[in-house]
Image (cartoon, rainbow, N blue to C red; front, side):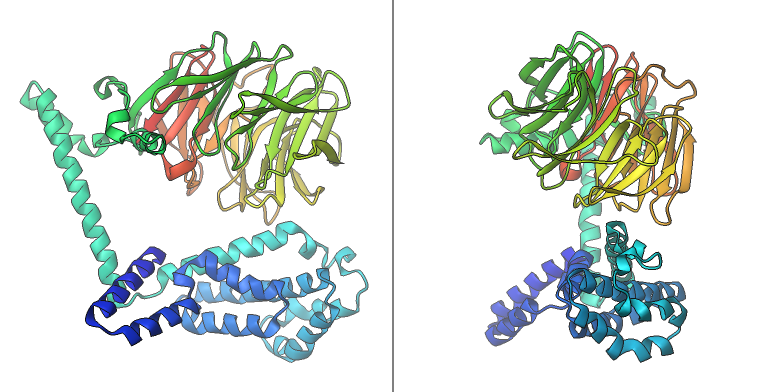
Length: 581
């Protein structure tokens, strides 16, 4: 809807100017500048609403919430939505109180209860507010058992996410005016026309290669699974070729012959093409796309690290060899030129792709530790590292300043120390989820462990936040893949067994699962194949990618541009990029 509003605004503006209605066009410009609906964008509406919380503007918060209620919320004839609305309104006002207290604005807290105390007591949710009336008179409410959970970053992030998701759902359900409905229908017609054009193109291609009428009929019946005009890999190549100043058609390299590419078994995806990187001579242990997708980094058990590109042609950019071995590999978030390498001699190497050399390093104080997990926050200012010894009896968990390369904090692993095997920051870097050898999932905020629960009797190999960050995926040594809700804590939503025969003597972690950019699918290595699971409603096997002839050791998913590009690595030393439709 947001895109339709922007396009329609432009069309109306163009029409007014064409008709000479300049004053009306100027009035439209003025109205747009002060648009309270924020082009029907849920994220913008949420940010504007929370800005009143951060400014401790109680009147503004109340007025804008009332506006949204009259403008959108009341138009939805769904009692379930209205119940959620009441709960979110309560959470929003509690967030206002907590933030005002954290900002040392005690007068704003008192003002809230003076202005709305009677309204709250007279409302339907008086029981949920009864204890809050003592809030202004408690010296340290953040230490009080009743209010302690409201001061955790996890709670405020949950309020933000839930609020945005709710507003997005409401906007999707709001009845549209006829003009916007016409625009949406026109978009659908254009897409349908483009789809028909693609079908015609593909049929012409099939006619040229078909030797019999029976083959033609069979291919036509399977048309929905084989429609191809330009693959995501082709589109991704165009970005890189255009950036280099060349024509996409002139700069394209030949792809693998599509007629020889095996198809996925069942499911939603078709394998369009693949490319193999064959420069390694030993089994691969890590394979990672860079954050912007311009580079790939792969490492093997001999400590060889290779950085390479796949567009327009597969080309090795640089090679390194680490005698102590490589135990973790992490691209800096939002900076495509920095790669962090965790080695077996307690060191973290920082490689600058622009200079093609190791520019800096950081080192744990204990000697001969293996850096088994690395993760940087969204601003790339901090890096967390986990290290353990060969026997996995020692555990160190540190936070580093990426600029000064100094250790900022030593994170406590509670209730009992256990090596952290996998780490993942949320979108703003405020939360850090960790998996450990003891089978526990822990969540950190402000360098403190705010929650933790036992997810498996065996070690956790990989943990990942879901895209909405309300849940966490965990892949464990026993071959199980599970999804856990963060709030309420430790609620297991789904569990499936991926590997019937779990691997033994694992020394490398954080490489078993990868999410696509939309958070709808999860890629997992399973034996000689990579498997795509749908995670929109449970964890359901969707597609099985073609066998690579050797055991799949790690997987990754290309995030930029929402492309369907997967990266798999095997024990045969081959890394493969697969384009999916």
